[in-house]
Image (cartoon, rainbow, N blue to C red):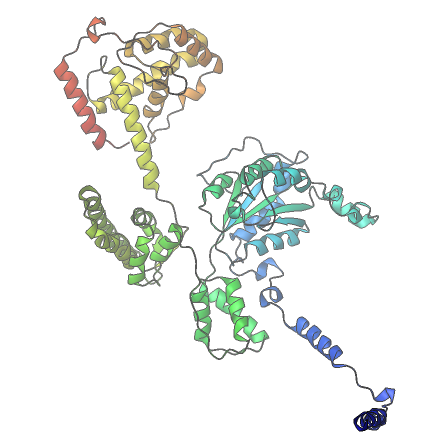
Length: 591
């Protein structure tokens, strides 16, 4: 009981003590809760903390780094957008007779409905497209890698994205706007928006299946400009797209240009750093402007020491060749870059080293440097042949030194043009094709000709080319009988005529394409007559695996002995000599 009474007294006394300990405070003296102060501080931090990339984003085209000249890709894109409606809208002056030339000069790109901006990441390709729209007062729609861009998705939105009447599909406010000024300016514009397809080289996988083919089809029928942006220009997907686009290639800005931008930002942010720090930032980022600005902002976070690690990039063959031909690259680095693709890197150096020029060299010194580089490349080519013929792969390091490292060191300069793909590969492929056609013609015609393969090319084919096409050009269908007589005499098939037309025309002469001068009526009559003819050939036509028939509809595929053909007897020794001379001369000839 005593304990119970004690507790009750304490309970009764406790409220009084609490009142004495916590006296009432007037309302005007109550302080604001801390939670509101914290919220205000967070709001202030949100206002002050922002990415410098967005804060110092260029507002005009003149502020873009490395895009100030008239021949810059950004200014070319701007001019292309200005003249787009003139050549591609029905109401405009549509350009007639414009055809695609994949490997020729594209001039102003007026024949293309789309543009392709390619270049390394972080140099302002997307920003350039947006600023061009801003300069012309156009709105834009962006589809990037975060959007689904497969065939079904692009096909579903193609009409909406490529229509030149944006108000039908976008905001209703624009369509219902009653402002006379806005409606008047809209009527003057043939189109008021464009489509930006960002990161088109990333359209792969199940999410974007068949999206590239649908994009090409959308470009063919679009009524508004389409700007495609990619990083990897040499991707196989992008190569097919590039045939339908105005190709604009962005290059990395110079170190001095990026350094000036970083110094300007540092001055505005009251950031003082040694000058060598800026060089380290640019070198570590591989001249990526966006990464440079982000790295500069990271320094302001209060870190006492900064470790500049070089940016991890996927080195392709074009970038490796550019670094090899750069005077700032060390000899050891050039040696290592050779192994990016040692099978084709010597060809890249051989194709592009004449375009390397050093400002400290005069014309005579430049010619001497080219001579020394050519001698080194020749030695490297001999070593490469030794490696592949005898399998002596221990000489690969010597080839790296003579084919790539030493020639670029002799030039001691910088590239003055874009890295070109080795033209030798195309010429070698053309040579192999011509050799195959010549072997086939020599096999078909060797019973009627006397001479080696060189005589066939120089003496027979130019005259035979005229005799096969001139009757069809001059007499039309009436000249078919004369052509059939030539076919029968020389044992030719239909494919041989195309080969004769190609081999009989020399590139250094202004020879006309005779095949294009033959009318369709004459070609059809010749084909029908060849199909009706029962021809006996002294050789077997190859069998077409798909149809199960022998190649060449004009022949029956019958084989007869050579000695049964009238006036077709030949000395076997002469025939062997002809075949041997054919193989030897084929390797020695250059076309």
